[in-house]
Amino acid sequence: MPFSQVEHRERGPVGPVTLAKQEHARRPTSLQVSPDTLIIGLGNEYRGDDGIGLFLAHKLKEKNLPDTIIEIYRGEGTGLMALWKQYSSVFLLDALCAGSTPGKIYRFDVNLHSLPPSIFNPSTHTFNVAETVRLAKALNLLPAHLIIYGIEGKDFKMGDGISSVVKAAARQVIERVLEDINDIRTGYNPLQGPPFAQP
Picture 1 (cartoon, rainbow, N blue to C red):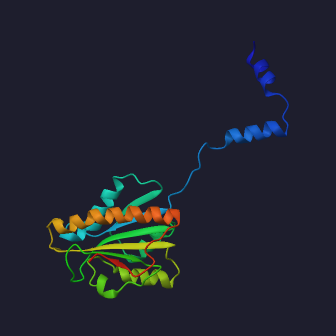
Picture 2: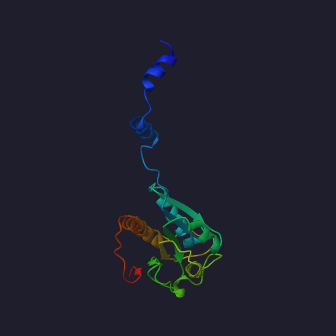
C-alpha cells in the first residue's frame, strides 16, 4: 500500500479532540527546572587554610546535587553580585581569620543577620565579603537566601596545605549545607535565631 494512503487513513478529521492529543504529544514528559541554588567557594588554594572554600566546593560538586550550580570564584566583589543574581538561594563558603579557635564554624543568614566586620576583616581576598554583602543590600541585589559559612583557619602561609583541624570542620559544613538546601526547598528554616557558631 502506498505511504500516502496510510498517512491519509490514520490522520482522520482534525477536530478539538485531535488537536488536544497532538498538543499533549508535543509536551515534554518532565518539567525542565532551572537551577535555583548556587554554591560559591572562595579562597586561594596556595595559601594553606585559605583554600578551604574551594575544597568545600569541590567536595559538594562530587555529590551531583540536583538543581544546583557550584562555582569557584576568585574575582572582585561586584562580579560576585553578578554571579548570584539569577539564583534564589546562594551559599558562600570561605575561610576566616578572626583570631578565634582554628576549625570554628560560623554560619550567617544574611537576610536575617548583619555580618560583624570583626569576623570578615582582614580579608585574604581582593575583596571583603562583608563589604560586598552590604553593597548588595544597599543596591537591593541580595538573593532571597544568602547563607555564608566560614571556618576559622589555622595556617595561611603560602605553599602550605589545608590543616587537619580545618578539614575536619569542613565535613560538618558539608552536612549543614545539604540540610540548609533541603530546608529552604521544603519551606522549613530551623535557624531563625542568632547566627550559628560552633562552640
